[in-house]
Length: 208
Length: 208
DNA sequence: TTAATTATTGACTAATGGTCATTTTGGTGC
DNA sequence: GCACCAAAATGACCATTAGTCAATAATTAA
Image (cartoon, rainbow over all chains, first blue to last red; front, side, top):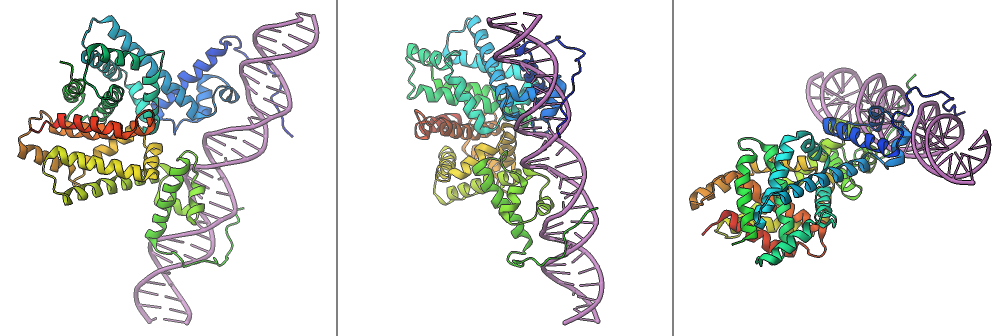
């Protein structure tokens, strides 16, 4: 015989009863736990306990641990790219290579300033998912990265055989360079990588 | 009271009783399962059942699923780099950029010819582990990638401010380009990426 | 106020990870 | 052959975690 929960008034009801608040609480809590102890050593029970919701609630919003991880990856990277792009717009940079380097520099600095975010990405992103998410980000219409890049290439008459491919490669190169330099950190760190990275990007775009 | 296994003669004993054979059977089986269904949907029970050994045997050789995954990643990438390097030695290529491109080309072609291996890497390698393993591979004394590269740079008097960093970036670029092109595959595939990749590498090395 | 709908709960079941007393195997000496 | 020992292998067992779902609470509509 199942003995289900008997009626008992919750003590702290109505403090946070908004629907999206529960969702956000789960996301924020999962982010913290995934960052500090990695997804493998975080149980769903851990997440719901710390978030202050019941286990069943978790399954209302997510299929499993890996779906919440996916949400977090999208949310984190989307915010970061958007912030970087806005900051770039507000500056008065003209050249395309300078713009790209500005965005990359912004992201690198942000991740160095926020090691938890970097740590989350390092621990939670597989190579396949990384390529997939990067692709989604570049193709995202609302963010408009690709459109902006292609338009700039057109207006400046840059001699790129496949501008779209070049864009992908630049972003991939920047991303992997960042991770490589962070992981290595010895004997050289990101500061030694930067000039070579930026020089390479300028050569790839080849703006006169 | 524990009721342990009572004495019962195994039917097919002595078919494979060599120590390393059991280890290899586990590795091969895990590779297959990880490739087809991913590590998340593969239980240790699945592995031992398919490998024809008892569960306890698994834990004699590996701490957990992720240790066998690590073994497989090292084994796979090590073999691949070694084969590529040997093939390069047997060809009669002189220029450094040509050598590097030969090796990258070899690896790309191999992975395209062996999608299971590519699939295994895509599904099982996290970004952090990827950087880590790549670093180990480059630093590996027995393989000697780094030494060969630095020696070549010296002999050819190439103007590289940080040759080691350049080596890392070339390998990272090649790796991420491969994955990106495979994941995307639409509207352009690896063949469109290759010329841009090789052109970029030549520019990075800048051999006259 | 009441009825219907939706959100939330947590006790429960199923599945998986990991342990360890016991058994089997493969020597080695007699 | 047999007796012994150490190393390898086994699978029943226990512990932890994932995932379910009938019951309850909260919200909305009438």
